[in-house]
Amino acid sequence: MKRSNLIVLKTATWIACMWPLGLLVWGAVTNTLGADPTSHVALTTGYTTLMLLTITLAITPLRKLSPWLSWLIKFRRLLGLFAFFYATVHMLAYAGLYAGFSPQTMMDDIAKRKFITSGVATYLLLLPLAFTSTNWAIRKMGGKRWNRLHKLVYVAAACGVIHYWWQVKTGVLLPLPFTVVIAVLLLARPVLSWNQKRKASAAVTARGSVSTAGD
Ligand code: HEM
Image 1 (cartoon, protein in one colour):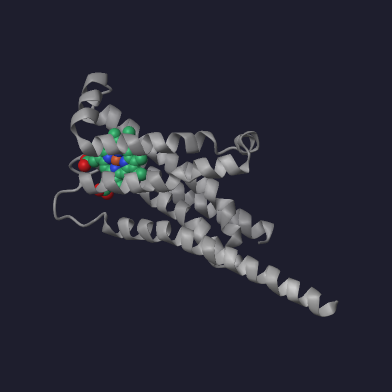
Image 2 (cartoon, protein in one colour; image 1 turned 60 degrees about the vertical axis):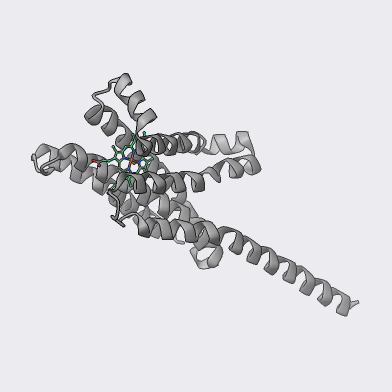
């Protein structure tokens, strides 16, 4: 991809990722966050976190599907860090607006409300991923270990979906699209890896027979 196109796309990504936050700030300033502003902030930031996490997760399978999409890798870290940013705002919104920063209330909630427990678990899974997202961390850990650790993103996404299901009322199917997409992405991973290995070994065999024929 041309450098100028990349700059345009990166700028667009930044604007798109900042958009939900901008709307929240605008709503807070103009007092138009609706009847329940606390819930509005929590729902918007939670939803945006899961959306960005899902998009981040989709990048590797999409790249494996087509070499034309290899440029997507340049956006993975940015999107992942924005997911973590919204998760942090979401967590702080809960801590401040719901629990009034009371450690006791938070501990009680974590112990008694399973949707809060799963939310905290999801956030804790995202922490090591965010902290090891720098080039320095990749060099220090080595590619293999880094890749192994970053598989946690799948567990985090699954936990995020469970958190969503436990948060909605019985019978509400809003988390279903996320569940389906994340399940497909999870299943796609081994299938695409197997396909890649199969293609690579076919290429080696073909090269071998060409050189034998030339002997
Ligand atoms: C410390 C961690 C977390 C806590 C305490 C927490 C808490 C909450 C609360 C209180 C709500 C409900 C708001 C309401 O009904 O008014 C909520 C909703 C939600 N949270 Fe979390 N959460 C956490 C982490 C996460 C993470 C990491 C994700 C994403 C991966 C996430 C995704 C969601 C989603 C998708 C919703 C529902 C949004 C909607 O209905 O549109 N949460 N969370």
